[in-house]
Length: 175
Image (cartoon, rainbow, N blue to C red; front, side, top):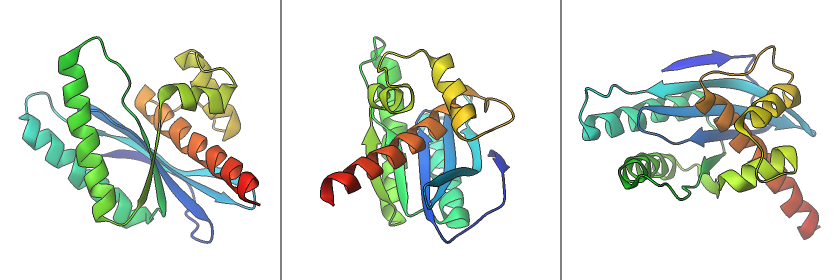
């Protein structure tokens, strides 16, 4: 598990963003306090293609559990699956997503799901934005020195930002 982190604060809303995968799972911890959002930590979980599918899923769940225990997020945003042309790929990613959802539920973290279209819309205002546009928006919104790598990490941050934006909209509708 690799991560980059900033100063940790706990008197705020802490959200865990997750970009599911089998080889690489991107994750990000964002804190929001009084309308200000900052990246507290982010990184990725990498599994070896030499390991069995079962071993890789176990590793994803175990590493995610460590992240949850360390940062104690209240909420999580996980990317929903979208149509894949390759059925083999969608099966593997759906298994990883299942392991992720189970781990979040087991640790009492509330879960929200967002499609790639919703994430792109939330960050750029355009649901068909290119991956590079999303990465640039992540960097600019959080005032990061560089675009987080690998791409799965920037995606996880974008998913968490989408969740924070969606929460704001739901609060406006309810007030």
